[in-house]
Image (tube, rainbow, N blue to C red; front, side, top):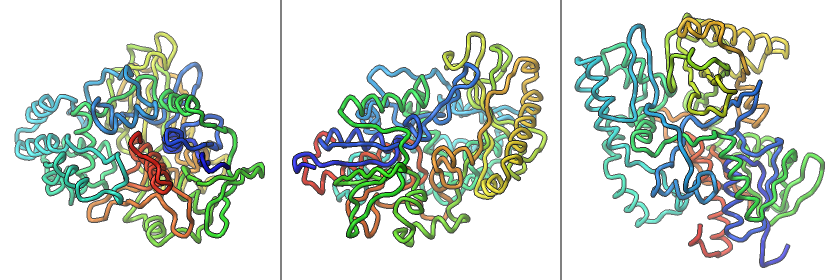
Length: 499
């Protein structure tokens, strides 16, 4: 390894790993990514069944608005391009409770009118909610450098650009969504505000999510998750990066408390000046470096599932005839109770992909159902035998189909099952801890999880993962990749202007 061009090895080719690889090449490092699966992308993934494409990840992407700092990051890594097209969606989601139907529209004034018409007795809380969504629309995550590296001037600038966010935190930062819903009298509004995110989530997170949609900074890039990941792969390879798929890593090599490379499952040793772990962090601690390097903060968060719960889902996809599905966008509705993963289910969400005609044969479209699962449900699925697991999946699909037909009777005879996946699927494919496709849930009264992307006791090892900051997701992943290179480049005294 020459002094002029040091080498970085990245374990894991998800969004964080690809971002680190791209920024690493821009900083003029030699970079290789090792990915255990046949294709890169991690949880930002899609797959094909019966001539249809199933999109696993992007319900909406934060950072799509031109001129924002996060949009620049997405463009730098190739995920979004100058002329990337987005789906023509006019709503966040719709909630159906009994005979009542209410939608959070992209047009905030339209939402206000609809909510007030539905429940005049909730006028005070509705207007307060709308006002604070406007405040939250200015919220942007820092993407220039890690927060622990920010100085006073950085914080002053961030505070000035988000001057109204303290109002959001004061009103909604100390209650969860269950409590927020309890402020409303109408049952349909109570359901509306506990549908999209787990009700344990701190309410301010929900307002920021909706504000992202309202402000035009949360769109859906056409082509879906896999297409976006593939654009990043193309960008990485065009910059001269090397991607090794179907190449799982057995361990990170540590010598004298310094990361010096990796050993693949095929026992190939690859030496490097720096190693970036872009896999699930529990996978890193358990299998790649050893639990002795897991500090007290990581240990306490993983151990305390009450304070730091995780969530996943049981999901099912169907191909339906166009014109037989009455829904639009994402819809939540009541259903006859059933159990899946040991959890009692009384509401279901379904999303139609009518905006992606390429996802299905002509005259057809894909619809997907999502049922939340948590740590307890993961353990239920994990405890099943292979035969029991398959039977439980079939039973879940049968129950879902029955309830879809009750809500959307026109689908009868026009719906074909495509696939079903569970928390165990995420564990198997992505080594996702407890099958979670996000990081820790941020609960009221609990400090939001955030760590530096470093491992105490090991030099030259960096973490690029959505797990380093709650709630995780794609924006955290892509910036974590950038920040890992930022730290390495600063250590090497490289110029950071083009970062």
